[in-house]
Length: 258
Figure 1: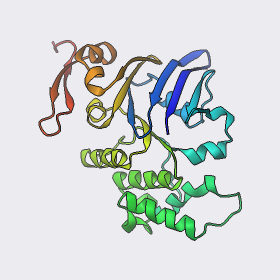
Figure 2: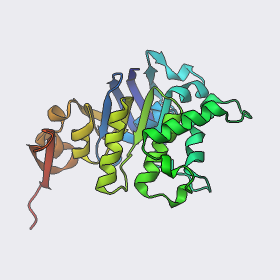
Figure 3: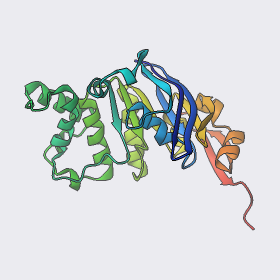
């Protein structure tokens, strides 16, 4: 299902967070948002999963304005993994995944065999069946992220929204998480700090700077030395990855150290 952002603008306390954000994520694409801290990546994503209401602009899912949907209906179609989404309560991994069924249940409905089948399938999809009865708090960072992605999958969404899904993970788990997201084939929009991860895994990249999109397109066309210098303030050399052929950036300070 296509996701469209049309002219999103958010102002809070007199400060512009994002302005005139336009993006089109086609069905099945993995699209990355990159930019310096405070550039508007998270604010853009929050508009998509409706924890932030834009002052102007529209988010459309399959051509329909999500603002006209009930929160329950939009939660059935859009699942989000945010930087603040790791619960610290005494839940097992299976119980955390089961939370993803909430949009499909009435307030006091009990979970049934279908919910349990969906939960088991979601855990299997991320390779975490063996963690089902583990206390979530005892899991490693990579295991937690995979369980939280399973929770999102249990929502059976059309669109996946990820805010820094590799944050605080070691390199192995960063690669595992992005490989998993890519393999799922869902329409996905994700904020990423690591430009090389974005170049390796994203079909398209949108570069944000001071609340605006300054470049958008395939990674090779967008993550150029000129744009990286202008937006991030560092010099970059672009080379091809020897194994995958994806563009990779080698960085150095914009000015040589004294």
